[in-house]
Length: 377
Image 1: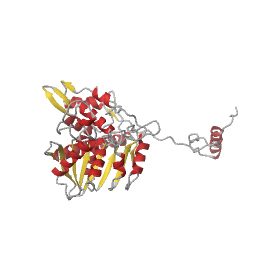
Image 2: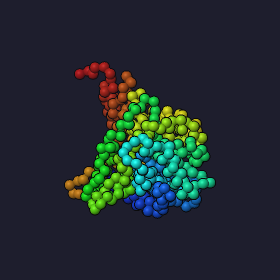
Image 3: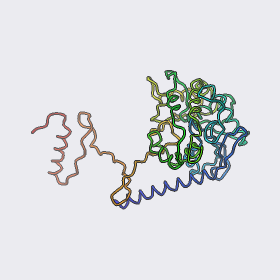
């Protein structure tokens, strides 16, 4: 009844609160570091015993805060690994990218990605250790380029929505002009206000609240009294997109010797063309991998931002007149009586009636409902 429903909702809210608190403690317990080339990263031990090193890389325009829900899941599962996450050049708290304007030469994927990864792996003393790479978007492609240039760097890779040019894709990147028009400075704004504002936007409304908060916290820097601006300049982000247009990463993925797992969002349109959807394109990329221990992993409810999306989309609560918050119940599946005589879905089940005459009358009614022909008056 209502009592069990209230208890269940209260338990779900308590578990969500514990998860957010755990993520806050988890991130606060990580050690922040900077390499010799001013590449920012965080590292922390998950679990109680030493284990392999897992390097997490984010996509263009984001920062390492997008991976914090995934790190919290690993910590909750008591996975014995050392997690390391970095901010790419021009993103988060890492160094600025030299040059001005938006151009493919300003952000060459083979150069910037491999240099940043090499710096972080060197700073974390990864030599001689078992290292796995988990990347999203540009970060996934950069991991594959690093493994192609330096085989044996990674014992395995997880590529989540990697950016790889496929046949039939347009010659001009659709996000370049939109990115260059993006607003960078926000006068009189705070991190809390921006988090609330972006959480209501269509692009970020499916994000995990903690991932969104951490992304805003690292993605916006103070540019004066009461002024915040994007840490990743729109020209830098556009340069990343332009650099990806010049990068042929498909041969790199096809020649990787280490095991590779490819993951995609079921609602993603990242690689969509007139002939194939984005999940179909990622299925083709998965088929090109030489070693893949698992089939293509598809998160049906996710778009491109798979690591930052909530595991289960939560519907918004409704407020009652007395101030109480009512969380909507999931819709129950309609019970059906099975297929009809002509193959069409059957009618809803007739309530069970006791007594011979009542049962017989119920059967006659059911036969009339399921009958494909004209009904007698």
